[in-house]
Length: 260
Ligand code: 13P
Image (cartoon, rainbow, N blue to C red):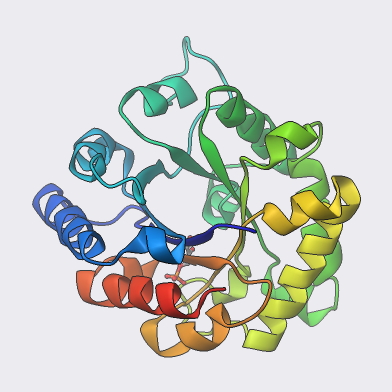
């Protein structure tokens, strides 16, 4: 069974004081939620500069962890401005978002580079939250499955069956990110089912059943119930609605109740 996950990607938002307050508000909320009974995990991905402080706050709750939003494919050395998987791991972080569409669009993260990053994260003991998703144009011209299949095949190339179980996949259609427009529950299920079949083909079906596939793109408390209710949706990767304790905690509550 795939783990049920509610993850918040803060992107480049929140000043220090509000960031720490929000981590605390989510941590306090999670304490009272019996997440283990519902087999649900919560992940917060703040900007890199807050990772260490955030992971100290969440360290007592095994169902709540911190993720980085990116890491380098390199072990270390003369790479100004970069952060290695080991550095991230050293400060108590457990996961890392890789291949987010904003990294692909604005920072040159190609399928090949994302593949190297995913491998490095696995090697260093981090959970890669590996993101895929088509652009509006691919959706309109009917190429969306092809694009996502290529991202999966290239991004997870060379990863062994024993390692893939460590990976979480996030499907985020680019046209639904930050636009207020979400995929319909049917569109999400269609793609999640497609991704799971592809994982079954590339690895095997038992493994594919155990991989969490999260949906991301304008998830809000008022549309989460239907999206999370789809059989192949194992949780959400949430942007805007993860920046307020009220909406993120509500999404955790809905996830706990609806995700199966
Ligand atoms: P929004 O929820 O703001 O659309 O962002 C989704 C996202 O990109 C999460 O990684």
